[in-house]
Image (cartoon, rainbow, N blue to C red):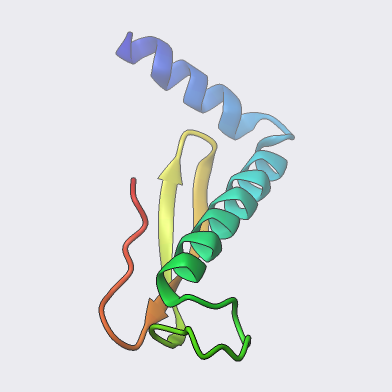
Length: 87
């Protein structure tokens, strides 16, 4: 099984679609994180709301190793508390 996974990873990394696949993974991860942080803060980015629970405070850059290669993520930061995306 491990050998098959290593062969699959090598095949995906060499394919011309690997860049497209990494972009799609990055897009999906970014959207999910933004929705989770929106729920946690009580407002969308730059939205004025009296129901806001906490403000955003920029992003922290992290690399995420996937089978399609390394994906660069920008994880939102919060002023109070913390946000960690689920693996």
